[in-house]
Length: 291
Image (tube, rainbow, N blue to C red; front, side, top):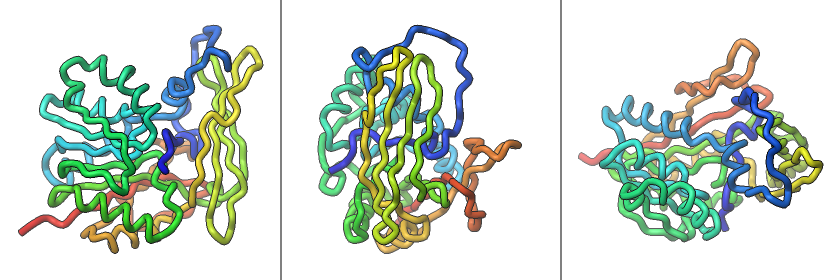
């Protein structure tokens, strides 16, 4: 029911383009590892981790220690979470056993003893039971797999149930006219080309299908290495569902732009924002404190 991995904000509009200097031969469609390609071209858990700790410390006065990473895929964020702090612990939840196994070998085993503080769980996020945590995440638009409001409400209630008082739920989203348009865009990476393909949006249901593919220097291609069957949710819709799920406060963190008008990766809390061609934001929902 949940996707193995999903595109991040860089997929939405080719943000944070890296300067490439190496000219290695690179992989081919026959030799390539699709998870390694995904993490190289798309995934940016360092930025997510910095954001989570900055916001939690500012709003709650302390660094969080317990994380639940929903739609965890390869569990890279969870691995980074425990590697940074000896007291930290993480629960990485995903329905697909393949990326969990890949991440266990690539990200957890190299941690040594710290790997024991990451608990991978193959389960549906709607049903999973975990200890209560300080922070839960649903990143890379992965929760958009829930296309009906009542299912999204069930999910948000499940998140709320397993948060500590004053706990934080962080999710990301994209929007704007560009997010509603059929497109195919490419970005050069080390030894391969990343391809983001977005099919036409259904104007009545907001249903969308998106794909990630890779082209290689030898001319071979992994077409649609990852496919996502989603509903494009708006920020007001999600904020309302979060409030209905019992969260006491929902804040929007909007991405700033550089001198060229491109996203600069810096997210600030905002109450109002211009509807740009394609915009990126975090939503942060807070559970009510006790007492």
